Amino acid sequence: MDLVSEVKMAQMASTEKVRYIIDEVRKGKILVLEKGLNPMEEAKLIEMTMSIIQPEVFSGIEMQSYPSGEDTSILGKLFKKQITKRLTVIGPANQLKTLKKDRNLISALVSASK
Amino acid sequence: MSMIKRFKVSFSKIFAKLFKKKSACIGIYGPPNAGKTTLSNRILRDWVGNEETMGSISHIAHETRHAKRRNSISIEARGHSINLDIVDTPGLATKIDFHDFMEEGMSDAESKKRSKEATEGVIEAVKWLEDLDGVILVMDATDNPYTQVNVTVIGNMEARNLPLLIVANKVDLPNADPGIIKDAFPQHPIVPISALEGVGMDSFYEALAKQFG
Image (cartoon, rainbow over all chains, first blue to last red):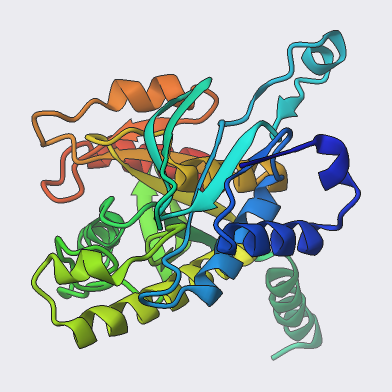
């Protein structure tokens, strides 16, 4: 499992982020992104995942991020800013299973076997 | 025809062309088996008639594997009419395992074919997000609403600043709880309906006119 910092992801362009995630997940890694992806990048990741699904080889990804929430900082409240990038966990669908999820908690089961 | 009359006619044509409001193009999104096509068919049944349908429905996921568009549906609600183009999209997913189709009784070959077509359908649905004026997000009111598909679709609409209407579908089922969806996404309008039984459709059309009219 790799815990990926916001700084590492911020150095990449959107396409690079999606490519990096796909490559790591295909190697069997579980990634925990400190600040996740923006919604357009999430959609791009879904699209790219679909393009590489192969029966018996790769069935896709499990991805879980929190829903957007209100920015509770003074500036955030003033401008009614939404927080769209929050912690995200991504892994191969056959190794990561979401057990429970709500607004602020993701409970997942990670399996070592493929 | 007099010169003035002709001038008036051409001017009104130009004016109509310039300022005629085009139909808003609205996508119906959601995870597989949430009831998107059932809702699309219900809308057509209520406002188009002629037994026209958007597509077939099935208990097996990914029955809709190509987006289908129906132009110019006139809907009367809240005292005025709105004109919408509706796009029924394939169910969004982050994984598609052909074994799931085999468990439903399909053959190995059929399951793999459906799986392949389903992945293409998801890609098509994602691409459509860029060409829409708004989204109706259909959620199954018997399921946990915090799925990644819901989070991603809502995030995309918020980031693009486009209108969104959430539908809590399947309220005819005993374990449906639209309240959980309201708690999960309080910043967006939510209408509880049963597209299959036609429950809550008046409220749905009112919300539709308010959001996209």
